[in-house]
Length: 312
Length: 292
Image 1 (tube, rainbow over the protein chains, first blue to last red):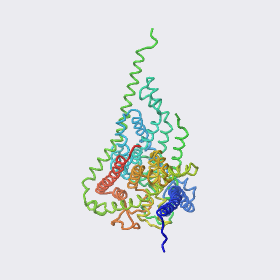
Image 2: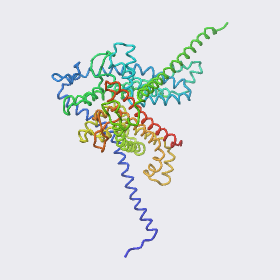
Image 3: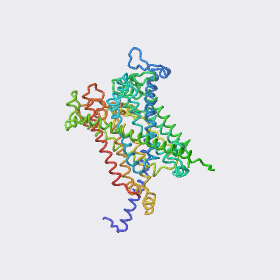
Image 4: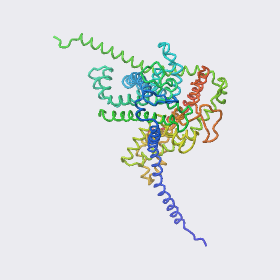
């Protein structure tokens, strides 16, 4: 015969059940969430081990000394391939330098205008538009570089070849203007208004306030934004692949075709390099070089903005 | 006798004011230059691609003949990729953010995770492609499938989602949580019923923006081996695929001028999708975000 329960006992039982469930839940959920958070750590480890492991195989076939000293990058040359990273490095460097020459003046002046001159209303309209510039996919910029910027430049520089370093360099620069502008503006916004008002009260013009007061005070943040922008320019892929060409050349000629590290990885990926061939492993060696360079830049930016920050 | 020479001062002031005025104009012009580039870019692409834009363009597969080429395979590929990347990256990202903001103690390991996430956001996207190629395509033997692509993309945008979700959680006022604890709620009940609902609009906005970044990414997918000529629609997570940016890249690389126009038409479709996603994000932010 079934035992009859009173209502209060039923409630008691229910409570105990839900408490037991709750206590299990309170213990397991943090653990599950912890796993989620650790995945990002595993991603980093995965990147490092993948790159190291495959690069190790590459260096079993190609001597490390050849990789860093040889002045020729000819992996597709069947009888006597040559793997010297220097031409790819110089191509990457040329594009990054051109990009910075374009992005630093334009980005910094935009930041000064937005932070020191623009009214609140102008700022509210201009900043989202700049953000649109940052949100455009790089493939679109690449198309723009190849079909608009290169022909335009060819009108001024007649012996500019169809693929060159100049056009993608400029377009990469345009792509990173919003990044330089918004990070520099953040740094300038962090300078307290009282300092500005002090200078204005002594009779300084806005320009003098910007250049003699705000810029020096925000310098660490501004330089950090430049370094981060260089890192972005080095890692940029599609623009340089489309408009830069595929001719690894050691040198600093901006009018002829070049190849960057990222463009080489794309070239091999699109081709039919067999899994296990030296060419297949070479993209990891190039990838780890790229990774190390951008990592150094990112860490440097963090160091600069932390170490040299002016505290108020 | 005057100690101050009025004339000199006036001259100097005039000069300084002139410099100020000149540079203000210059700075304004520099800011406008970026906007001008944006305008030229849009104008070029629209004038070049507009006439190829038709309903057929959306429903045709890629073709050797420019007049028959369409973006169907790439459009479906992008949608498939989003269907895989979206849930994975959002769940993992929000989970990480909740752990870091609500559970993690101030320890060295927590700081390490945090630094790691911000560094991961600075890794070039193509390096994620190399990771995906080794881990997903080779080691886990997923092949060059849309699943491998989706997982690679999830890892790529994960740091962006984590940071956005963390900011959204931080914006939830402490008083709300304390009130919840005060009513006898457990930690998870507080998170699930108080923190998450309040932080959700911010999280969704950040996630959609991160996803729109994934829609525009090309390089990692080329590295893991997404195809560039596809005349089919993916039918399972194991099928090969292409996405819109790769299809556009393929058309851009053709020597014939006609394919450049097709590429421009493809870019219009891509930009339309991105604008749609961004509008949804802005809409969510404006509609649901409450100021506490």
